[in-house]
Image (cartoon, rainbow, N blue to C red; front, top):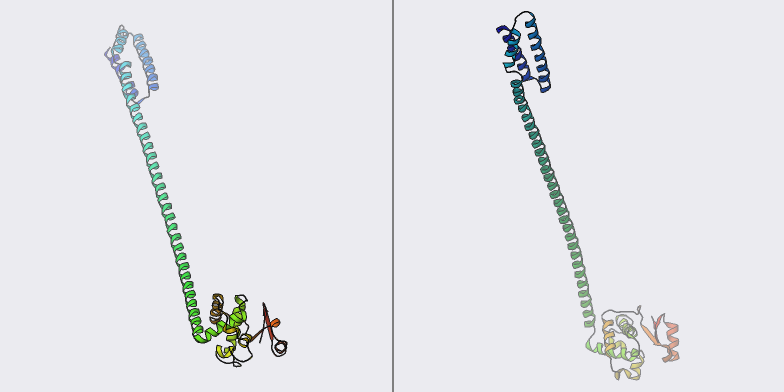
Length: 291
């Protein structure tokens, strides 16, 4: 009796130890195997003549904490792996979320750096463009200033030249020049008046004629207004004065002409002399110019 009980207890402890390490399915299989082994053991002992030993053995086996205790221990053992698995899953999920968050933050940081770099590049390009534009503007301003200074210098020289030309003629010569131009070209346009003044001044410069306006104009048989006295009665207009001033300042259309005549108003002998002794240059309005 004691021996049978001891054997059953050892068998239960053996399978209980296996149940701790086995899965739920393995535990069920071992429980069935253990039950079958117990039945075989009881039958074996009954057939060998232990008498009531089989019944007592079954009673002892029934009293032994078997399947219920093993099932409770298995549930306790199973709860722990399940809990650990859930924790592991949660930790994995938290790790994934952390990695995702870190990746998003890193992506945003990289994007912000790229945007800052792009803005810095664009700002640098704008600064360089502004520098180039400012340099071009300064160069243009310097060029314009130089051009203006050159023009001012040219105007200054022209004014000095004109002033020198006017000073080269005395007041008396100036008045004589005004009257002869008015008398000879009073009905002519501005160019016609300037041309008459040019001829008089060309004679003053020439070695063939006197060296003053008065001497040139009043030389005998040179200008008909002097011969007929109309030079003394003319009224000088403002336009004639302006044309004489322009001639004195250097405005010259004469091509070096030293003579002019109005063919229709001149004597035939004078006309013949002009044609035979002088070189024809050009004609402007009623006057023909010779050299």
